[in-house]
Amino acid sequence: MFGWKLHGDGKHLAPGEVVKPDERLSWPRTIGIGAQHVIAMFGATFVFPLVMGLDANLAVMMSGVATILFLLIVKGRIPSYVGSSASFVGAVVAIRAAGGGDATVTGALLVVGVVLGLCGLAIHLLGVQIIHRVFPPIVTGGVVMLIGFGMAYVAADVYWPKDPWVALLTMAATFVFIGLFKGFLGRIGVLLGLVFGFVLSWVWDRVGGQILSPDATGKVTEHFRVNLEGVAKADWIGLPSLHGPVFEVSAIVLVLPVVIALIAENVGHVKAVGEMTGADVDGSMGRAIIADGVGTVVATSVGGPATTTYAENIGVMAATRVYSTAAYYVAAVIAILFGLCPKFGALVAATPDGVLGGVTTILYGMIGLLGAKIWIENKVNLSDPVNLVPVGAGIICAIGPVVFPITDTFALSGIALGTIVLLLGYHLLRATRREPVPKTGR
Image 1 (cartoon, one colour):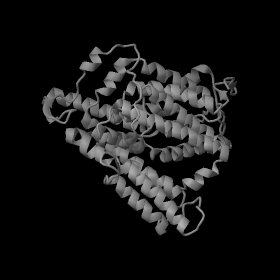
Image 2 (image 1 turned 120 degrees about the horizontal axis):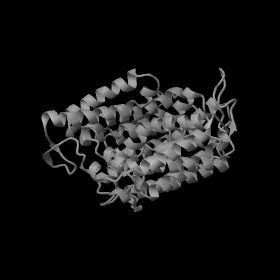
Image 3 (image 1 turned 90 degrees about the horizontal axis):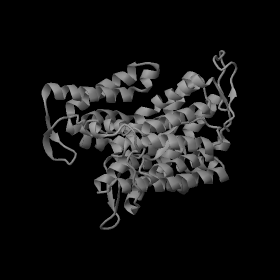
Image 4 (image 1 turned 120 degrees about the vertical axis):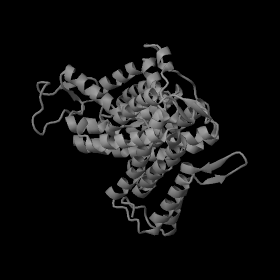
């Protein structure tokens, strides 16, 4: 697993050649490519825990740990980086709105990791075709869409009102970075947008003074947009803040529907890697999902966010034609070292709310539209009422968010309710018509 063969002279790639997962370039070049993978994953890996109110420093460190576990479980056959998942943001915000703290959040995410790992085991034992039967493209695309659009109220009600002008300018700058910048700079457009918004907020504080807006508790006060007191107090070297999980049924129910999106995401990423490397990866699909579940369990058990495979790093492989797992081990080690710098974590945590408002508006919309991309690629027939009706109802339940009370103290709402309506509604209608579940989602 660790005996990488040197590709050619270790320095050059001929036209059409690729560096396979069990090969490597010279170590200096492998380290350089590993650093590229860190930069590619970095923006998303610390943005999502930041939005969820978790320790971004710990998230970066645990992404390295989860990546090493992933590579070991798939036996080095699937080169992939594992970082913080965006799919949980809406559910986590809902948990916090109901009074849940960090431990409740990570406890719910840990359960998702266990369920995801068990799903991976079932897929490994029963074959990848089970995914197509339970989660055809109409379902997976719909769930991804309602997860993204179901988070719209977070940007609109939580972050944007804190500093509308900074949110608007940050969003506009991120448009430019993502839409107009090419290559590497375009891939880190979200990170560049965050940096722009951070600097803009700091300059505005110096020029215009304090802003009158809601603080972290919701109370309207005068305060500076950027507060670096925590950065000054933080140590250069040390462990990030750790905590154990707490398990609450109401929180677990909110996040469980995300398992569907994670399975769809994993399958898509693994198949993309298979197409690029020319390898048959169906036999490793179950292992990949198991590995993602294990990574989530390990990360959340110490207070980190749930993890998932990253499309950003697939882009790096496509650009470099280097699929060596050695580069991913290097990236994982670098990420762990980053996590051991508390001062860096304090700087990330100081990101102003207005900046997050601009960035999350883009991120949530992009996540939602990825669902439409799944439909388009699989030629889903939306003129069929069996497809159209449950998906439309599920998405509205998520966006509302619609609340369905179960007891005096527990209710299904938003993304959780929308996923149940979509999944059960689709399969019940399909069964009533006595038709087999098509792979194309017709």
